[in-house]
Image (cartoon, rainbow, N blue to C red; front, side, top):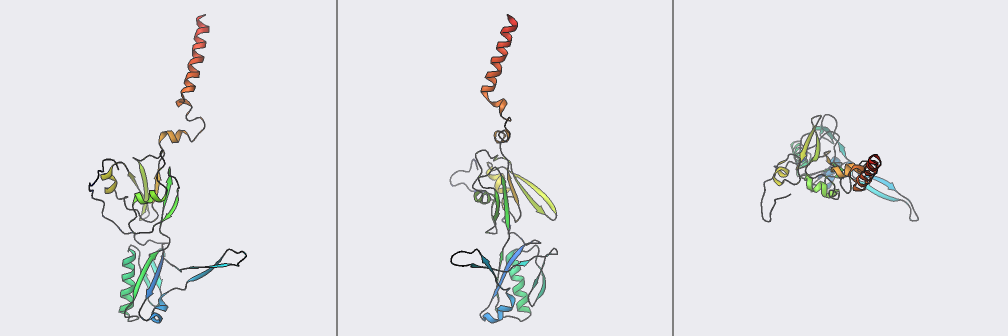
Length: 238
């Protein structure tokens, strides 16, 4: 972010909340002043036994999830099929709330929706490459790189690649982290679930990937070559 001085302001791309896609998993909880009325809308919490030891097995609770089907629908208790693909989580919550009230099932429902499997992948020349969960709707590229432990010193900062799947097609965005305006104007500044961030290594790092790749950049090699050529020249001259 070169040239971004103290107190300077820079407009960023409009934040876009991540939206529901097929195969996403959602935790949907309905509450009410009368808890008994809301029970029918909430999936049972699954119990898992994990590990064993001197104190016996431990039990872990995990909220059951609604998985978005290939058509972008979920099958919600007492309501049936709801098309939620393309909505953000607040839109899904509002849709369910309207349906519950319109059918006079509960008068005062409070609906909470959370993503369970939203994640991004950070690969390449970073400290800790891997998959990371999206813990907020508007995760930025800089925050994703921070989760991966920042770029290594050999990471190419002027050509970070973000690959995004959109309507069955992969779209590539190239981002220059040293250009503040370009970075913040990029459609890839705010990440979406399943985005892949790839940090390309610089040329020095690429050459280090093979045993002999840097041989021609080693001064001692050229000194040895020059010494041999000098010896051959002396022999020929004599």
